[in-house]
Length: 467
Ligand SMILES: Nc1nc2c(ncn2[C@@H]2O[C@H](COP(=O)(O)OP(=O)(O)OP(=O)(O)O)[C@@H](O)[C@H]2O)c(=O)[nH]1
Ligand SMILES: [Mg+2]
Image 1 (cartoon, rainbow, N blue to C red):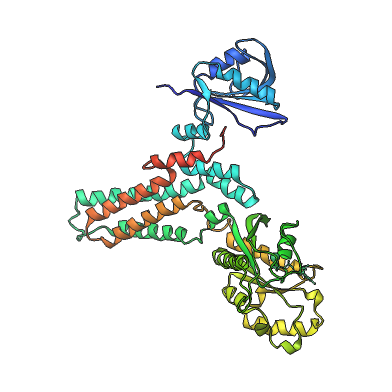
Image 2: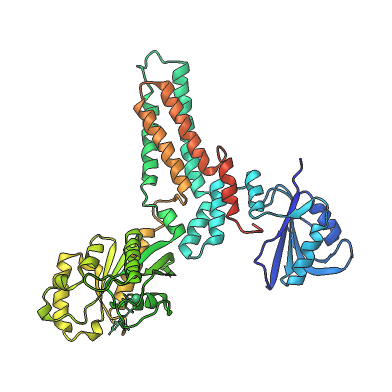
């Protein structure tokens, strides 16, 4: 059965300078004849008066672009109408298109689905395209462009090719056992499988950098009440996101804001101050807030602990004893920065510096910052370190193609598992060959030509209308 022709507004709805309506399918010719009413040279822009095929009324002066199958995004005939971006213009054109036989509005993602069906894009490239449309920061854009351009696909296809070649050798060994060879698989096949297994493991052990970049990095600000956590959040967000007050226990829920730090997407969470309520009237809301704060700290990629050191005096002894113990405990791992705030309000600034030095010796000093959110003192050094941290954790340039979705990881883990089994069954060529076949199949799922029917609807549903 011939595909129906589909159309959709490809640009965002609403008033705009230009709106693009895209049509894909065999009926493009009929649309050109009925609405454009002049022949279009493929891949050449032509200005034309669009007319309603029934009433003959003028719909718009539009720039028309025709792509002849198969040299188009979908692989079918594609017509793009670049309209003036007004509601009435767009509505008029869409209504006129509905009037053609065999032409209907597209489902979300249907253009891309056709590109996939016609082998214009593989599944990983389709995902790259979806990520590109969703990209909010520079680094996300770069990663998406590379995946759309086939970086991940080439890596996976390369592995597959080598496996298939090894499989051919294995099968030759099975069918024509070399008299000279001992029982088992040839050294060459074993070497290839070992090498591939190691390369796959390297990619599996990449710290989830691809997924992290897609989803964003999670940063939680924690610490005792009144330390200046919300003030720090507002400073980082450069706007008043959270309420700041001198009442201890102002923030009670987790407050999130999205930031772009050094080109990377970061979700920053401000949390309720942690304190020991023992012996006082239990406040259910504050308790719940603290519970959420701890949970958020646990699930975040980086914690920033904020303390108020303005009331520290030399009599208070070491900072380690002075600071809130529960918070110190929370940030005892290396995925934490420690902010000692309210330097401006300290009346023992000099002695405080010595105390900080002693404190730093107990902990890695490059994680500790004495600053004042109020007057900005020391803030630059903290921001620089924060940027460095995020860049280091998310660095995309290192390591080439990234796994950007859990499903890539699952498939690769399966492939690697099959190879491990193959290597363990080394003396039985038939078993080795079977495991290698399974590995090829698992890899095939990443670029999506086998076993993916159930996945397709999920992946294409992520697209907006008109893509
Ligand atoms: N002097 C001085 N005051 C500060 C500084 N940073 C914050 N403050 C003040 O400290 C008080 C508490 O600030 P918040 O940001 O609300 O503190 P918090 O840690 O979010 O407190 P909770 O939400 O109650 O846990 C406010 O009155 C701020 O203006 C600073 O660097 N110096
Ligand atoms: Mg707060």
